[in-house]
Image (tube, rainbow, N blue to C red):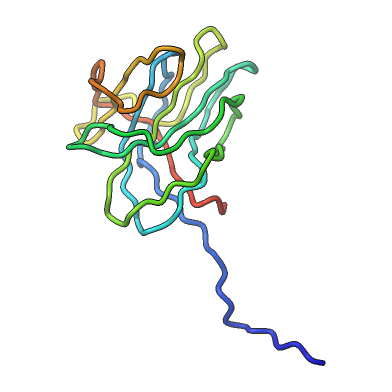
Length: 168
């Protein structure tokens, strides 16, 4: 009995889409949801959301989420991670369930961290840039709202948030 090996067998490649804000860094406030918009570069299933943490206290607990877009504002919660401890450097947090995204469609990657668990600094833009849209919201129970609701405000700075198909 012989087995043929197919040299053309499909191998999945990593797909990562990020906000692109990398010139500086900023410290997000605890208890608020921070969102930045990212556009899918192809059709794929998002398995993880990521950030680049410059510094972190040992006890910082955060979680991330993915929202749909509604006229340039976060809307429906599509998926989220569990609360986890922050890790310094580029790190991806697995979604509880994968989320399918569509090529050319905008989504919002969100972050929340428990207040009083320490501070951390993440890669982003701390200076005003016209293309950045960062929205904040506050939900009861330190969780993600769905729908997002009326943002508390917006800012012209952004965080380097990414979505990934789980292959790094």
